[in-house]
Structure formats: structure tokens, C-alpha cells
Length: 199
Image (tube, rainbow, N blue to C red):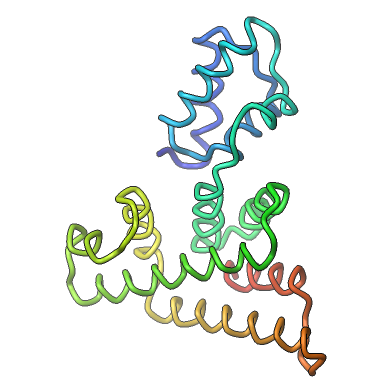
């Protein structure tokens, strides 16, 4: 998995090698939908090569041909949050929304990821090795490696702050549903949550 700035050039070069004519918007769309896993991107490009048969591929065709990798996009959202990249975090949030994810579903995925990070941060602080941590997480090994990488960017205090932000967001939405003070709709609350987490 490459860093953000390296993925699109890789896609561009790979597509050129395969004789695929991708527009720049199509390149960005493909990365947004598939994520940063180069094996998955290579597989998608091979599929696109067969379908395109020499014609130019635009972002609309990518939207039809390639699957939305929701797991990859939640990783991008959490990575951006952990690194304080608010613009990138909001961009990842928009991709998830455009893919049909509801605010509640996105919050659930984000909360699950932050809680796993909290567990891993605690294990790291207690001297656990990566192999031990992966065994303690009931997730695919790829996911476990990503969570460990994310957890290393957090301190215990920043994990605590993130958990507090999640709780405040949930309370604001519950207040909205029950017409109580401090209320906030789910869309607004999610936007604020992402900004608070990334800030």
C-alpha cells in the first residue's frame, strides 16, 4: 500500500503500460473507489483494459465498472483524521456518502475503528509485539496491520479525546431525536465529529 501522493502516479503509469487511456478524473475516481491496495488496483486495471478495448476511459465509466471499497475509504478517513488532514478527511467522508453510506453507518465504522485503535494503543503501551496484537484483534490480518499503523500515530490522551468526541456526537444526535437541548442532526454531527477528530 502506497502513501496518498504515490498512488495516482502509479495508476497512471500502470494504465499507460497496459495501453489504457484514463482521464485524470478517472484515475482519481479509481483510487477513491478501490483504495490504495496496489494488487486490487492492478486487478481493476486489467478488467478495465478488457472492457475499454483501446477507447478512452472516463470517471463515469469507472463509477460503473469498479466497486466501492468501503473498508479502504474508512481507512483513508481514519488516516486523515489521525494525521490532522481535515480536507482529506472531509474528502474521504464525501466519498463514503456518495457511495450511499448513511451518517449512522459511517459513524459506526469510525467508532469501531477508533475503539480498535484504543485497544491497540493500550497493548502497545503495555509492550505487546505486533504478532500478539494481531492475534488479539478479531479481524483480517491486513486490517490488523492497518490498525496498528494508525494506533502508533495516537497518544493515549489523543485516543481518550477521540472517544470523548464520539460520545459527544452520539449524545447530540440522541438529543435531536428526543427534542432536547444540545441537539444536532446526524449529517451536521458527523461533519463536526470529523473536524473535531482531525483537529
